[in-house]
Image (tube, rainbow, N blue to C red; front, side):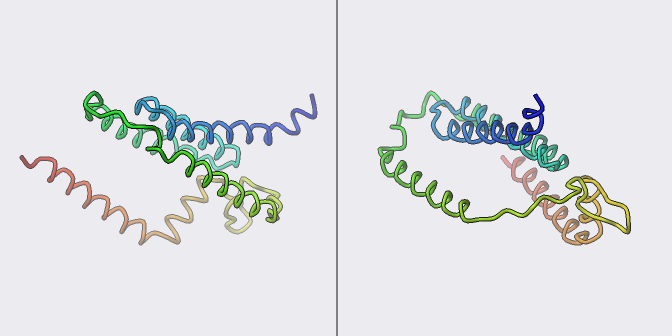
Length: 177
């Protein structure tokens, strides 16, 4: 039992990593776009779980809200608006399955060689602390806020203005008849 508890984070990592890769493969392979969208949602949630395992709670919540919520709603609206009955049937991978399989195996071999020769750094003794201010160690959300609003305030505000202009432009273009 103690062995299972000691290796639980590694086991959970492999479970969620396999779920993310499996869901990503299903996104590409499934013929029905609705099923593909749900597989994409499963992939997003598995990646959020991987972020939680790395104690990146803020990024995990953003992953769920932005991708799992907003982007998936956008995808589902597009899928519902496209008339799927009028789409013609096409072959899976358009007859390029052998080429895709060979390229996939080569890509996996290259990644395997790169990761086999790479030495990963030892984890931080206090992985929950990303930023230290004086003697106080800040947690994940505090570290993101500290860095964002202290070091990157101007780019953050410029990006928010660009998003505001894009949103106004989308409303204006959407209202034209």
